[in-house]
Every structure is written in structure tokens, then in C-alpha cells.
Amino acid sequence: MLGVFIDVIRQRFQEGSSIDPILPWVWTSDLATTGLFVENGWNENIEARNVRPGIWLDREQNIYGKVSIGDQDQIPVVRQVRLESFYCPGEMDIIIDCTSTQRGESMLIGSVLQDYLHMTSNYIQAIFGLRDMSSVILGRTTPFEKDTKMWTSPVQFRAGYEIRWATMPIANVLNEITARIRDQENPETFYLDVALRAPYPPD
Image (cartoon, rainbow, N blue to C red; front, side):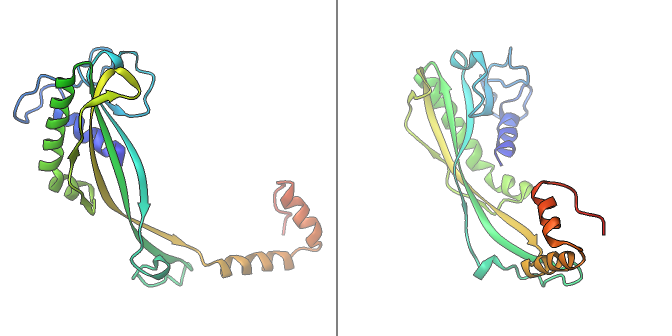
């Protein structure tokens, strides 16, 4: 999820972007020369992060919701392969620190980013299959807690998405284990080999 928004934001600030208006901050893929960092928030190894403006993305809480009992999907069980289908909605809170050594510049970058994410949210949802995006909130500009020489203007929103998965019913798994034990001449030796991470004895 973070990778999607990092790429989307880089497209707005990249060199030669056709999106109006032209901005004074330019992102390039070369960390040594880029005029603006657009990176994940835990990238602590960039030496110049405390002297050049940056946009740092991170996530806060991630939530799995429920729409049915046991997360059961409406898709029927695929009995040929003994799979059960499940579904639930997911939501991720994303926080973006817009940092600069100048308070005003930090606020301006945050304001541009808020406008961009809000105005393109419908396209982002359609292209990447998101369920929804909440209102984009721009917070107050304050000293950056990771480096008090910097200012940060936090931009926050929640992105919703869908999760689908399939599992094999546990009863079938247990039946297979029982059948395998019955095929062994010595179940005790069989489990000893399993505990010692030895391969299964030949049938």
C-alpha cells in the first residue's frame, strides 16, 4: 500500500512532470542530487534528509473489518480442491511527514500534497482497486520529533481495500494426518522423525 502512494506522489513531483502548476520542488531517483525526498518513513540512512525537504510516508494502524459471520465469502466452496473462500475489508491509516528546515516551506509542501491527494483520489481508487479513501487532513506545522532542526506538516488519510483468501478445512487436514499415521508401521518413530525435522519415512 505504501509503495502505491510513494509512486503516485513521486509522479507529481518528478522532473518534467506535465501536471500544472510547475512546482519548485523536484524529485529525481538519484538520492544524491534530488531536490525533494519522497521515501518511506523508516528510511533512516539518507544523510541529506536533515538539510533538504522531504515527504516521508509511514502507516499507523491497520484494521481488518467484518462483513459476515466467520468472514465467509459468498463464493461457494470449491469442493474439488476442498477450499473455503473468505473476505474482509481492510483499512490502513497513512501518515505523511512533509519536512523542511523552513516552517513555511514545510507548510506549502503539505498543502500541495493535500490538494493533490484529494483531487486525484477518485483516479487512485479506480486504478489501484481501493475501496475508498477518507478525507485528507493537513495538520499543524510543528518541529519534527525525529530531528528538531526540521519542521513537519503531517498529512493523514485512511485507505480502504479488500482482502480475500482461501483455506483448506482443518477436518480434511486432520484426516490426512490420520491416514498417514495408519500407513506407518511405527507411529512413535514417525512422530520422532517429525520432531527432529527429518523427512517423512518412505511409504
